[in-house]
Length: 327
Image (cartoon, rainbow, N blue to C red):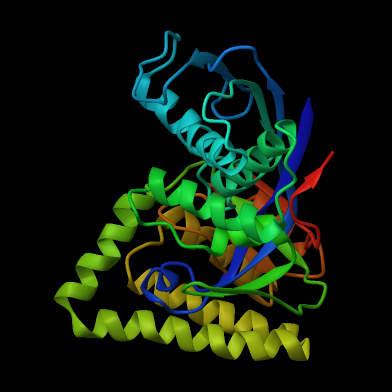
């Protein structure tokens, strides 16, 4: 039996624009998904997903998620809950040349699902690491990141970027531009996360930005402007200028709002953070609902968010310099 974990992430800059070849800077945070994998004597997968729905569920199946499992939850929930795990197991089987390997898998996570904090990437990275180790193969981190990206690409119908999975596999702050992925230096950041309890529809939001780019030239310019912010933000990170970093985050949120990927609850949390004295605040992830990220070394933003209508939870999230690991 092997237990691996991987961190979630927040985007300082660059979500959505990264889909079009612009750079992005995500940072791993100290909230993790933990995956326990134990080999079986057959080729079936038994997934106990304790935190992938409100009450969790257990499902056993074989041959991929095209087979409808016999479980008392909606089919859409099953497919969402086990799709990433199934794709991750296929990657582990391929890496270890064991196409018929079966596993009992337990997933536990303190990363809100679908909220822009990289829950699917963390589960995917941890599953590939644990399953390959259970089969006697220790994959290098860069291969785990690449295989996790391929797994997400399959599940997300070709719309994934390397940002989430690379960040989760390596930890710390990273810069991703197309296939170029590398770690970058970052100071200790006073990260505060606000969560509205919801989740955006990533596919629909990505498609919406694409439609705007196809219709309006200035929408393409907006996406490119996000890339310009990322490039400046990378230099600011290296200089350790957290005040300027916050200002750039404010700009980035405004551009994302213009692209139609924010929501009333996200905007309310962003403005509550700014009014409380945050150095900067923006949505993180696909948008449409989920989480914002703010920078504030005091407790003022966290307190303000907890009293903001529409905010379900607020918490501090330290930068996690460690990526995927065996527990």
